Image (cartoon, rainbow, N blue to C red; front, top):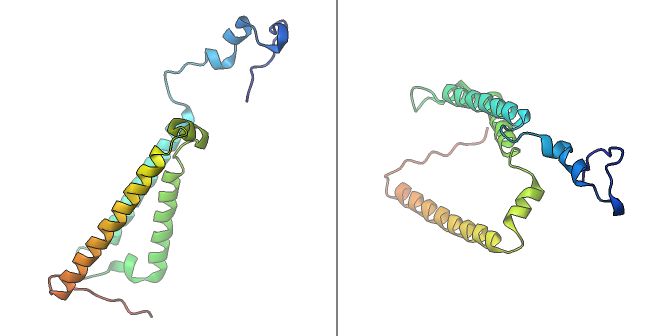
Length: 151
């Protein structure tokens, strides 16, 4: 826990801060009208990485859907693009917030935990249904499946 610097004569009896000392503390005098500069800068960095990611994805997509393009055909390029996109995604998720604040917001009940568990089970069930539908479409000849052989 951080305290404001002690000012001479600012302590009351019992080690508590007086109202005068609290009113002059940095926490009270800081304006709350705008977010910290770090948030603005991280937002700009995130935007730049996101735009770069979109450009790379666009470059990776060839005009002809049957042509894999150099970004996807060459394993070195493919690995570099995957690492860059993964790093960009990790940075965006790293902005998720303070654990203590999130924990305080969620409280001590298990409502959120149960909601996440319910969502996870429903999501897994939907994935299984989607996969079964894809397998039926492949079996019925509606979708062509291509298997890439290892080199």
